Length: 200
Image (cartoon, rainbow, N blue to C red; front, top):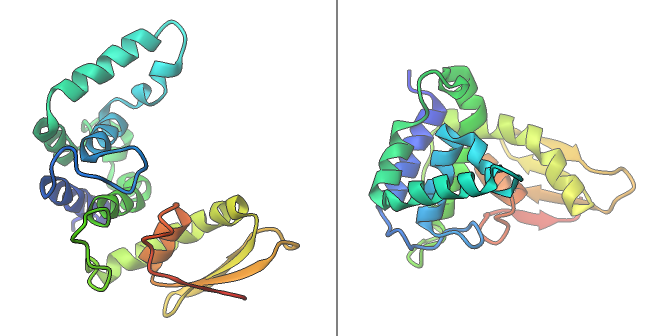
């Protein structure tokens, strides 16, 4: 059975191939090529996520990043599709789903929802299996979003549940939407997330 992370990796690859390297994304300051490079680094070169900022090795890491980018957009997308080496921990299916399902769902939407022809009335359809996994993973991540907003927030997804997070003394809000939309809101894609916000 295909894992939800593997399905969303392929969805991300399809989204990346549908746009040009310089197409915008919802990740501030990143074009599609930057997003593809980020996934390749995360998959296979995680040391490069912080390497350029470290003393002694910073120049070497920056050069490695430059070399990766120079391989070209299509090559980067192919590497996104290929995924991490088989000996990396995230190649193990349960860990892959835990680490990558939400990550790849969000980044796929980062590409699709940033395009001028995106129709918010017709977002990408997803499976019930994925939606339930996103609710489960989102429920673990919502407390961080509530703390960041300095509010006490009840996240409500009809048919899936509700969860309240944030300081007890903070102002109360209720945010309602499908699991995937709540996840997008919690991860900073507030303008594109299809949720309703009201007083709790």
